[in-house]
Image 1 (cartoon, rainbow, N blue to C red):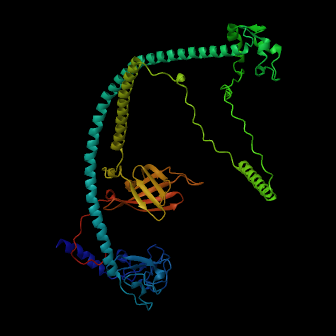
Image 2 (cartoon, rainbow, N blue to C red):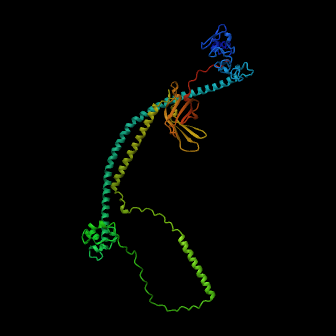
Length: 531
């Protein structure tokens, strides 16, 4: 009964008599019992001049049902669908603009009334949208509850990590001190080992230098009198100091420190350092020449070679031909040998340092110090790494807990997710609250379309859009940026990506978190004329 009472005024309103082209909301301005005043107040005319196909009012309100006033409006009742205002110029123009055909009442055109069919389709669409909104809002409430629980769990986890951080910091400090204590004897032992080895190296080098100097002295001492004289030194022109290719007497005496001769001790102390880099030892035969073979004591009996008989003319010609062929073959072999490239010599591997230049292995005690210090370092580095991981986890939790995920945290579930949309050319990737990127479909490097900036919806609906900024710069243009519009849907999916302006992208993300609370469901009984 209450529903019928509510519908009665609507039914009466539909039956109200009014001039053609006037809506129900404006019918009280058109009273047949008194003159009509233009809606803009510009004039008052007798009522019989309303819809007389002559424009009397400046705003065209006296001709709502004709095309007389170009700035007038005609109201389509469109019973069964949505009412509509059209320009008065379209009245009786031969085109059906109203779904009920009322705009073509005097044009001779018969318009089919499609309002009920349009109304049916519109109601189906609205019902589907209402169903999506109801289901999406149901899922949204679940998302809100999930975030409440997850937030409490994260807060508990954060408290645990913050409490454990202090003890781990103390442990790291203890292990640092233990490491430093273990490294002291290690360093001392390694330094001692290094010093011993360097001393041995220095002693070996000095010994080698003495041996080289002694060998050179022995070679330069031609008369073996235990002294190297100026004349003996001059036998080595490679020691020339003025670059003329010969060692003069004055140059030789200068090398000997101003003396005319030098014994072995003075040669090593004063002369060897000045000549060692230029001095070249005389080349000695690497192997003794082969000894002549002893003659055979038993001489063979002398045999006379047989005397050859003189050759015939045919044999002489054959010999000449053979000699000619042999000469040609020799020439060809010579040419081949000249044209053939030299054989490739494989690269020789780099010579490894001699064993005497390598540091010997550590002794047992030094190695024990090294092993103990390394174990202390490993423990310290493991604890320090655990502390860094814990600090990173604390930062991530603090950021996530304090993040603005909507009025009730309904968008929190998007924080760790990424969604893609593949088009003919690109694969677009949206990671909410992080970044947006595009990558060529056939392969290539991704291009940043922006990183998280802020919520970008209007003041009354702040959480209806996201803004991602400071993406990869365009060629001679601004940095790329993306606005993400959030639409109500039962599933979370990127539905479209466009570029309305250069380097400015628009993406639409469907998500239950964007679904508003639906209005109470209306009764389905009864027949309504208008939506």
